[in-house]
Amino acid sequence: MKILILFLLVSSSFASTIEIMSYNVENLFDAQKDEGKNDWAYLPKNTKGKKEACAKVKSKYRRNECFDADWTQEKVDMKLSQIKDVILKERKKLPGILVLSEIENANVIGQLAKVLGYKKYYTSNSPDYRGVDLAVLFNESSDLKYVGSKEHVLKDEYFKKRPSRNIFETQFKLKGKDLYIFANHWPSLGNPDHARVVAAKTLKTRIDEILKKNTKASVVAVGDFNTIPELKAADNKHPMRDVLLKDKTIVDVEKTFRADKSLSSKKKLPPGTYFYKRGGQWNHLDRVFVPKTMLDEKAPISLVLGSYQIYAPDFIREPQPATVVEEDIEEMRDRGFKLYEQKKIETPPNRYDHLAKKKQKAGFSDHFPIVFELKY
Image (cartoon, rainbow, N blue to C red):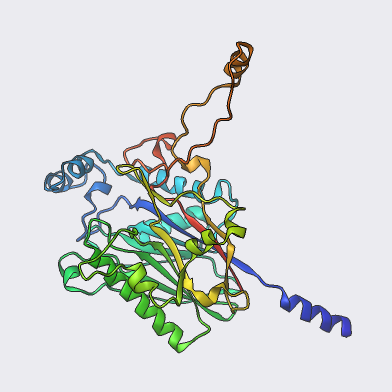
């Protein structure tokens, strides 16, 4: 009996972990018309009304893109296969919770769930004029139970004319403990800074509500926040610095990781999750935010800071510059040339080409995924 009691005490002290991945999959659309949405660029060429709709596009680049695109089910399947490769080709396991941004609807996420092996998924239904939304995929277990979902609409005079993506909240019970996941895809950088300030206020207000009711609740906000350090709204507010992070109750996980030299020296991260080619600038559009209390290992659910990574294997990056083959190296040595070690260049994400007909030419996404673990 004493041995049994000791075993139960020891086994109950062991912590478990769950992995979360957040990924902007770059325009994952199905090949069917979504009524009331401007999804013409992601439809087959022979779709009724497509030619006329594409002709109305103001941007010459987008207009030609719309005309050229022949987005068929075959191409949808190819993109789903590329997403599967990102998640499983080298990692060999599904994230416990997968959060996706830049997806169209439940139809295409249902297809992806089947390809990946997820049995449960939920999507938002935003007023975004293109029909872009968010998704959360997972498999329930004895530890992970789904509670419910809700959407938070960005409300402001600006959004009456140009509605954006909702903030998508999903609640779980993780071994009986409250876990809230917020999927975000804030207004793009083509919108005024004020639009992202509204998004930041919406998210922060809801997180504060949750923590006020339950101080032990665990909250994770992930996604594409479309925010760079230089932003400054008309009211002189920055969405991160002056709203989301102002009272210091919430922390930016990547910044915390990079500031911890004992961790960052052991795991080198790419310079960012997104690369602006025009300015040659890396940015951190994709982020993870948690209450500061979740960095405490004694928290009911804690974030394992050392597990944080921007997942960027070579195969989802743009192709490296041509390298010297082994035969040439030997010849150069024989001829007396000095050879220096070729340093790997930080290449950006290999963005998806929706006109591609073969996987080898298709690419993956213009964003790198983010991966981390929660301990409970």
